[in-house]
Image 1: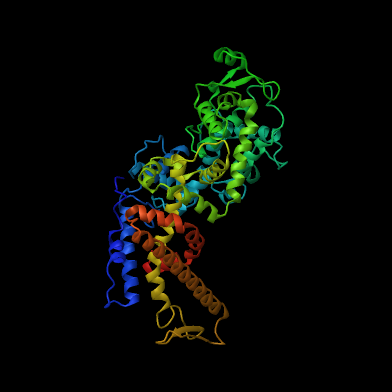
Image 2 (image 1 turned 135 degrees about the vertical axis):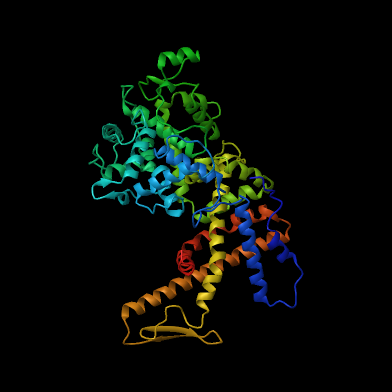
Length: 534
């Protein structure tokens, strides 16, 4: 993506800055502005500035970042033999998508729209809420969930290799998970080493696992091969990855840990023994050591960072308490506080937007996971007296892109829905009116009148009224979204903040109000689909 951020919004900018024309009525000016803005939104998509999920099978591969993520996640689940990293839609990828859709109970169309994307998110990412029960048919897990379980057990260090369709390996991993659950005093007393909703729901509850590790008061077991060793290290890798640090959640690497004597010899200095009898030290050659050191230094432990990282097997509760605090902070933040926090960082240095975009679109899967963790990270970091100043980097890029992308998608839906809803509402007779049951129409003054046949079918009357309510609510939400967006963007343009930078700043500023209204557009999406025949 080589777009110049000083350019863009050409159509809408001309409309805003054009001298007022006496020959145009106010409503004509508004419609011209909306038409120009929709053109610019389409150009933003085709130029790669924004890449929303497609509404139909895509003809071209525009969204390199998301395509790489889809390919990576399908490879993680074993639907592709390896991850080529290619940002293109090829026959192998289409076949893998169809196989996943089949196993997940989705329409097998070979392209990733909202349903398929959300299914991948739920099974592979660590922050998307998982409704595990929906992946079960009675007592049987779906094939897609079975693959996701094998992946999760490996990533959390409970199996040494990643294999699929291996019941013995799956059972062994769940048995090790039961051992970990017992040590952590997890709330469910009936955790069983078998595939059932309760056990798998706990396995996929990353927040609860972190909270349990933060509450540990006793040292790790004496046996170095105890599953808790690998589990603690792997959960830390997941959390550091979610928070944007340079580590890969790829399972347990035993070579990363050294016996105490070897660690002392290598470091050449006396080390204190935390939490009683500790027998393993984290090697300073490992990526986990580097990531942990950087994490502690980012949180005000500049001098102690390397030692805290090396003594991780004893200091891990303190690390997870920091992570748990970030999770709680994120959950306690209102949407308006999150939006204001992100906008405040960017508004101080808008010239960095192009660099932010280039960074965000290079992140692959890390772009689409960990937004909650990063919000908590930013909140805690900004409040930490001894922490580093918050600068533009990978995490800020993720937050900015994700928030602006969400607002763009909602605003685009509103712009597309507006003419359809307008036509539906201002037809002389409301669609679906039936003199046998209920009718709704308006006169030239737009005074609406409703006629109800007292002998009509009460169920059909209720359905008609509900549809009117949904459509009216969608139209009201659409108008509010467009009004908020037009007002803010026009103001930015008149201040000289034009181009794609002005578009992004507008989306960041209005994202909180737009996101709150976005859920009401679902009825509008249904109306558009019905009108277009999709």
